[in-house]
Image (tube, rainbow, N blue to C red; front, side, top):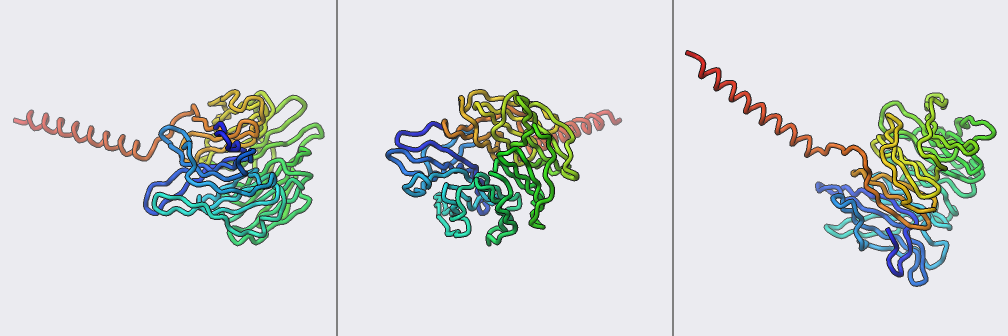
Length: 361
């Protein structure tokens, strides 16, 4: 999405799925915008039109983050409930609550002293059940909190030289983290302790990482750099051993993410391309080139309900892309097919019964 006149470019973005009381779920997009000469850094909340696969031009609500350069949003993590989200800045993290009243949406800043003074954070991640929240700092400090009371479950000041990437497993038992020096570690969240360092040779660097999410046998995906070669490695989390690898995008990877249903894996490159991979077959199904021309893609996030992704880069802002992948069946479509089958069966039964009766003497 190109920046409007006077409005800062969207440097980070995330989906927020609001589940209304008895009504249909509402899909929103949270943008973190940088400052311009005429506009301070801010958070914008936009509606998303699933039919058009487009973000509304005008925000539903905006919140000014401050008036200093260090107040600019750097990353956003939305709680699985869609009720609140955390925004990272150079100073620390700020907590926001989404409040829906009939057709209006309000954005409320909440006091969270534990998060506000922790300094610049590179990685933010909620567990799937929403009970844990982890942050990895530019200073290499790892913190894992219980949510929402923010009791510290694990605090390791020297987890890494500086964080590169991080993810929490589907069952919330493990956290994987990678460092700018190419190392990677697995942490046991419940025990609040490091579990294992992922093995690598001296000329290998592990960069991006994420866990599988399809609910079957769990795996860990990592991008591995060795010289000029970049491959995606799959590890078995029962023993943290490599079970296979494949070159999916013929270039260096800047970000890695997986869809909420675990069917697809997205890889973004340093020159602005990205691809989406079928996890079962490990084959590329969608390739978008020059989405962020010449700029590293800093994040890719799958839409919770549609085959759409939102990607960001510091140069070009946020872009929404509809994926060229097999369409999922909607509930109403399945009911329609079942209804048609039922009606067809009833007609055939009636025709057969009438024919039999007509043949009887």
